[in-house]
Structures are given as C-alpha cells and as structure tokens.
Length: 425
Image (cartoon, rainbow, N blue to C red; front, side, top):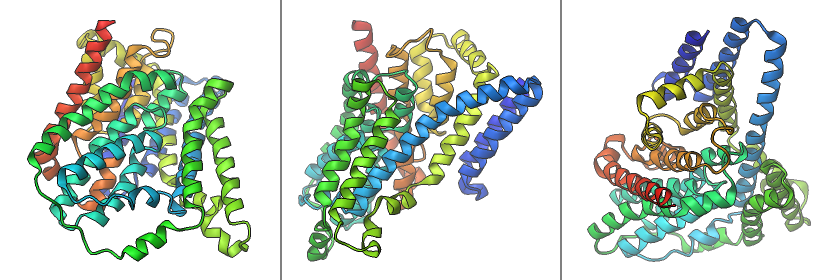
C-alpha cells in the first residue's frame, strides 16, 4: 500500500508541476490525485467503516481552510470591484528609481500581510503599469514585487495560504507568528532591496496616462468605505479568534457578512441591475474557485499519506539522515521554490505531530518562514511569482540571472537571524 500511495502522489505531483507542458489544469490533477490516494488507502486497508470516519473527520479540517479562503477572497474581490485599491495606488507619483523601489517593496510587504501575496501582486502590477513605460524597468520592479509580497505574507496569519494553514491547524498563534517572523521576513526583503538600490540611479519615464480617467476610477461610490471595511474585517479575524476561541473561518465569514451588508447599504438606492456589478454575489462569481478546489485535492492526498503513516516514516528518515531540524526546514524552503509550498507545508503538518511539537514550537514558525519566503528564489516558486510571470512576461532564466541570487541572500539572511534569536533565548 505504501509504495502505491507514494507512486500515485509523486506522479500526480509531477503532472501538477508540468501543467504548462501537458496543458491540463492542475486543479483537475490535484482532485484526481487526492481521490485516487484515498481509494488506494481504502482498498489496501479493507476497513471501510473506519476509513469513512477518518475521511469525514479529515474533510472537516480541510473545510475550515477552504471556507476561510473563500471568505477572504470574496472580501478582497468586493474591495477590488469598488476600485478600493485605487485609493492607494493612484497616490504614488514619484519618478525617482530608488524611491519607487522602496515604496513598491514596503507597500507590497505590508499589503501582503493584510491581503495575501497573490492579490497584492496583481494589485501592484496594475500600479506598475501606470507608472513605468520601459519594459525593462517593469520587469525589474515586478521581480522585486515577488520577493516583497512573499516576505510580507510569511509573518501574517492571513498573508499566505501556508501560514493560514498552520494557524488554522493550531500549529501557530496569530500574535506569536507576527512577533517572531516580522524581523526575519523584513530582513529577507531588506537585503535584496538594499543591494538593488545601490545600482539604481536617475528617474523612470512614466507613460502618458489619462489622469481624468484614473480619478474617475477612484471615485466609484463607496470605494474608501469598502477598502476600510474590508481591510478592517480581515484584521479583525485574529482578534475574533483570540476573543471567542472560535475557528478563524467563523471570523472571516462574520467579516464578509458585515462588508456584504455595507456594500448593500452603499448601493441601496440602485435597482438590482445597477447593484449587481458591485454586489457580493458578483464578487463570489469572480473568486478563484479553481484554487479552492486545488487546495481540496492536495489536502485530500496529503491526508491519505498521513493516515497511512507515510509522512511519519518520511519524518523519521529525514531526522536520521539529515539530523539537524534547521537544515531540514531550510531545505524545505529551497524545495518550495521548485514545487508548490501548499503540499510541502501540508506534508510537514502530517510529519510532525502537535503532541511532540506543540503550538508555537520553533519548528512551526521556521516552516512558516521558509515555505513562505523560499518560493521567491525562482519565479515559478510561488503563486505571486507565477502571476507576475504571466502578467509582465518576466522570463524564467532572466529571473534566475538577475534576481535569484538576491532572493537567496535575503532568504538565508532572514533564516540566519531567526536561528540566532532562537538559540539566544
């Protein structure tokens, strides 16, 4: 059974990484892999009733993550369809290369912590297209955006899917992950940005934009109120969990309901046809449902490996072979630049139990950092990188030549700081 499970998982995983080559959507492959892994587990074990109960319990844990993601995605879409992000992006007017570099990096770093690295990348690419005419400049700043968005997502419980998984799973707490990973994540950003800023001189050339149109976009009714309400709802989620001890998805669904009501009140006087483009129902139709199902498939597959004790065996093998936990986790970070960090973190959650490594243990914090920031080493290593690659045509090998070494220096710099602080206490 173990061999069949491993082969099925690896085969599915390889097909997912080759999505652009085989032209089959990775969500379909993930779902297929997840179901097939459970079929192998059921047929091999022969305990249909017990397996059914285990699957039901496992699906409950998965649902918490999926409902959280759907709620957060819908809030972000509501902000976007109200042009709420234009309130921020239309206020950047500098033409100085260094100043723009630091603005883009820091705005993305903190925005990613509130939203997520993928959404932040899409929003900031829209900004860069408004302020940069030269395609070479766009390529460089977009690459910096990948590093800053991933670094910003790593230290927030709602900033990256993997950190959210660890938070919902009980491996980390919101306050502690912010407190312990903020500085390492900031170092991960500052090292590459600091090096790049010494190379930059002069001013950028801005494209000729229709300024009246930009102002018009910003004046969509309720844009500022939805922006404040939406971001407030997301920030409120950790506070809600700490105050009520209810799961995070309850907090994000409460926030969604409040923002939904707010959007209805803003457009109260409009008829149904006029309200529809600004409604939460429309926002729900725009969220990336494919990504939600992708997470479902991956987490189902990892769950089958966990219940078959494959992940425990892998953890023991790594412990006996490599030995040092810091090296193991840093290696996972490098792997996350090649393969998706979601299954890597899901697998690590199955490899190490909460009984041996309780909430806020150093290993969970370090996994959150390494999985979140390691994806910046290659352009294909994170959702943010893939989005930037598609929207700005940043080449895979161009990124390796110009950005990867900087990303590695930042990644190792933040990791070194975390290890130093860990051993200091």
